Image 1 (cartoon, rainbow, N blue to C red):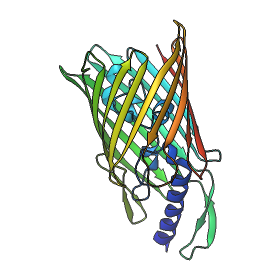
Image 2: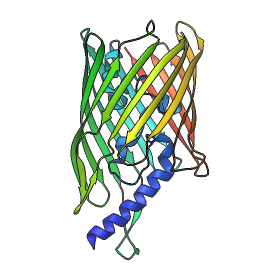
Image 3: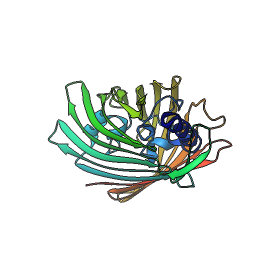
Image 4: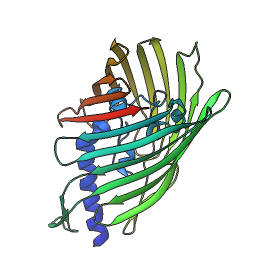
Length: 307
């Protein structure tokens, strides 16, 4: 009876997460894996660019998208992100990254997903007591520069609470090429959540594993385009394309526009995304807006500081 109740509650959460947060998910079908926080984009820049970001990540958010990209941090970088669907569901992220000599970099991060208070159900579908589901992931990663490529890896502790709490550990690995075509083109490959599962009562659920391949091409000094392909374990293969243009630039300020499209089969009409970035000296404020078709929309904002 407990297993049936937990399974029913989990199905409700999967539907809620798919409905409210598709705009912030990796482009994969939800519902056959757990640890949904591991699917949530913590970067408005990435979300606005259709999540075509594997070869683009160059700050503290690289810990999530491609740990090899940590090597592109110039000195130190901090990122704080909040995302909201307009109700009590929220995603928060914080990360710190630092260069360690010419050939190494490291970062730590914390990533949370909360759904607010929901009502449980028994095996017959009758409402029971309320509960507050949430996910948490703690990450530690590093990167090293080799002659022709960059290699990065991260380890993660994952805790997920529905009615019961389950914990596990997992890891990511990423590759980033050197710059080709006079530094204009970069290629990347990642494998995420390589192992680990979450067990609620007796039900074991796999983490959302995925292989992603991507590229980024700088068309002009202030114009970047990117594309990604994703092969998740919990849905069909999918893709995304994105672009960003630095529309205004001075020594102390800058304004960047972004747009993207990610293929998705779970919500008709979803997939288009857009956003803006504003730079004040060493600080960046980024915003992403992702329409979700008939479901609604999601908003995400971050503050990044490099020093």
